[in-house]
Image (cartoon, rainbow, N blue to C red):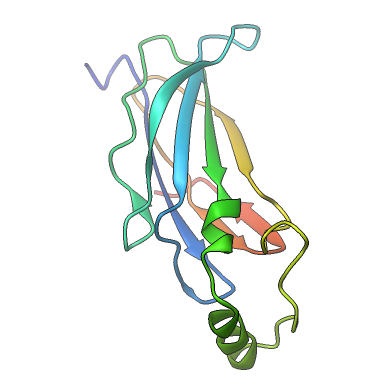
Length: 138
């Protein structure tokens, strides 16, 4: 596939509550050609030990919008109580991280953005149990 006619996407996740990459977060990638078009699920992957997802599917020609869905609930439910207490001791964090949804106030994060053919889009997710932030990286 020519990089001149398609865009490409990469992402990584940093868990800001513990100051480390978020490993094992499932991510799905969907695309559409035009704001009124239906979303087509292209596939997905999961983050590695560095919080990176290096094998997202390629975007089809004509893609104008991309959606990344991050399954954060399963990631936060993997933390043990002792790991949460350790993170709380290291930071001035809430003593009770459980928000009623296995420790994640946002059980999933969906990021939608517009793309231009030939461009690469690196979209990092900065994540914690009670919030998140995204930006276009390089």
